[in-house]
Image: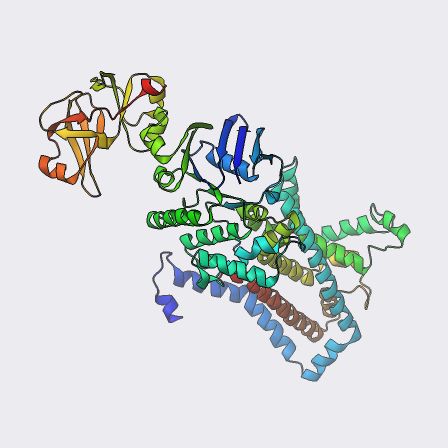
Length: 277
Length: 356
């Protein structure tokens, strides 16, 4: 560290900017999270185990991770498609589509939740066509996936888009000249270069989905054991003045999310090993 | 494999990149497409490769029409200016790529692929780097890998787009000589694009000089250098002084005129009776003598290099560049600001009326 501080760099203000960065992340991220752990660790281990192993809590954890995973995976595929179309093709209304991608960022999540619920409810615009096939979109786990997909899409598109724009078209030409087909060029040349960005987008979308509350509560139906996500469970506990229970679940959620994100980061590091020079 | 290009036309919007190009490349030949940027040389190369498609005209390989055949079926090797290596693959995987993407029926076995890649890495003298990633290589090493990768598929035609353009001068000269030796070894029909006349003259069997979407001249390096077919070729293949004048009885007469400095190339095409003289075909002396002698003042002397380059200003304010030997420079003991006489060496000038 001392070595790092002493090294002369062209960019001034290293000490100041690092200090501010540390202070800022402490205030905004680290201290609130530490408070969370302090609060939950006040409980004896046995009680923590009891809270976390309650069937209702386990069910909501399973549901949250599963639906978030499905939503993030869907966004991985379709986010790539959207980014591809936006970068590679020219068509009328392109800039409009480009702007639309950001909408889930800007829209209040409650509004998104209500809108989606209205659309997918039994008598909604889309829901009425699903009903005859026995597909229940709103007030089901499918509804949760729909909401989480909606809010997570921009992450994948916005992380992949710039990388795709910077991709050297000559390496694709080179692959074609060496006899590769379209599919081979995509899977062997384009996709490997996109993996780091795709994984970042996936991780962001997944993380966002894990913590999503606003849009999910409207469309989920919130039935304990069936469609109750963790964030809702925490709020429910708080409303029952069960602060210890709420913080314990929250801390467990935090740890699990952290582990998942760590794994994704490791994958990402592996996928860009060729960049280390 | 021989290449024939018949009446190729290519437009980008209102800009005509190629205007009815006809060209033949014989089997085993090494041909340079030489021209300034925007002359259409890269476009022509990409059309031969199938990376670009012409608006009109045909491309034939060994007499067979390949105009509409996609690049992957043309059996060509293409080397890009910026290498275009697959940066997420090691050197070995890069070279093996063309073999691994073959359909199962024609794909060599794993050990065959390994053998062939090792042989190619030995050919480009980079066996030791097989497990490196492109980001860990120097520019010259990257370009040699790109060449090995192109050769791995055993192409019938090798096409190189400014292969040494992104390298520094020393590495460029080395690779140039190396490419020439390589070609003498493997004899694959090769076409390379360059804007560097020295590179074209040094490496190619034949040089195709292009300008504004047209071919100005095709010939051996000696032909295009010593017998340029147009003022453009003369001007492009080295530094040149442009004078107004005439040739009488094989002797050069230079008119004292304010027009025509070595830099205004555009005018060179319009006005007749211009004389083009290379700097080394002029001589400097302290006394007048001989035909076409005129007076000038020494402005700048550059004595670093194989010859001494002297910049002078004539009475009519034209900047003239003269190259003399070091011995001559010592004998004359030139000083900046000195008044001297410039004399064209007889019979070795290019006159527009002869060519057009």
